[in-house]
Length: 443
Image 1 (tube, rainbow, N blue to C red):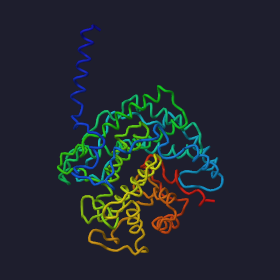
Image 2 (cartoon, helix red, strand yellow):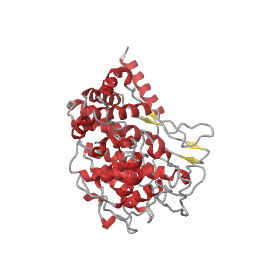
Image 3 (cartoon, rainbow, N blue to C red):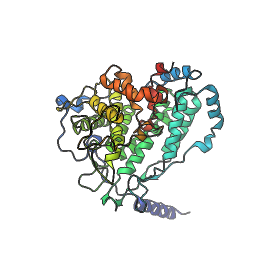
Image 4 (cartoon, rainbow, N blue to C red):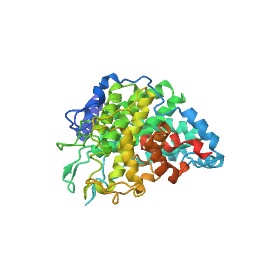
């Protein structure tokens, strides 16, 4: 082939890629991309987020994996912690069934948001990367239960496959939905990315904690994560053309800030760390005096049906805040003590959530914006790879076992539901019941 023909082919190829590439909104800084169009943000005690910097970066996002694994292994022949601790015979079955070639999910060059169907709505959608999420979550649990390096090998190969394949290079807009009469921009495209990336970031952390990567392998994976996380900063409204865009402090913002925070610890990037702090403060500021989220807990028929789904959506916000507070605690900061002028802190938000979850036993009262009789609580205890189940209450209880709200958590959730059957909440990158359940309660 002549030099001229080669140049012509490359030119045409490059031109075709430009035609196919999305014209994304401009990338924003992580701090600016948080909180929608909020004009003025009031920080507790006039704090300056720039004073909050990462003290320990590179690994150990949530927990020391080796220490937790040892504790879980000690229980493997005694008691079964649902979804996490397995007997040696069960682990042998797991090992024998793994066919690594068929277990890997191929790289995804492009990703979209909702699967828009005739008469569909944003609640009916498909994340085509869901198989990877399930594979990662399951094997993260298996690794924590066994410490078997076979699972680390899986993490390494899968992450390298996606990094080298430049997955999520092209984002497909959610588009306009006639039922909601709204242009959703990239809101749910990016949500799908975040749900997919979370367990991958944790797997990367596990690989680093176990020194399982060469410098070159670490660099390849790190640089791919850096590009993907940056893409999730495409404007304060996630690319939406609507004036208001994503409401500040809602569950989508919680998901965004969670990924920012996971990445900040891995990368040592203070901008992402401070963006997560901003999201935490915003969520506090939009909370009512009784601890309810003013956006997620409201009366609304049709569309998002908040009259029914209020607790599910607020749980996503609260769970994100709990795990944000835990990661900040690992860095030497106390977010649990932050209070608004309305005397609202995270304790009060959890108190509202558990009180209305426990209706009618708790005596939760009907208000103008919430009717406890209509609230759907069925999803909160399910064993799902999501971020709206209540697994994070294990984390909260362990930190504040004597707090009055923690006692409510114990009474209405942990004791009746069972210490060994706490809900799987893997939307945070790893199963929180597996990582934080009080193992003494199983003895």
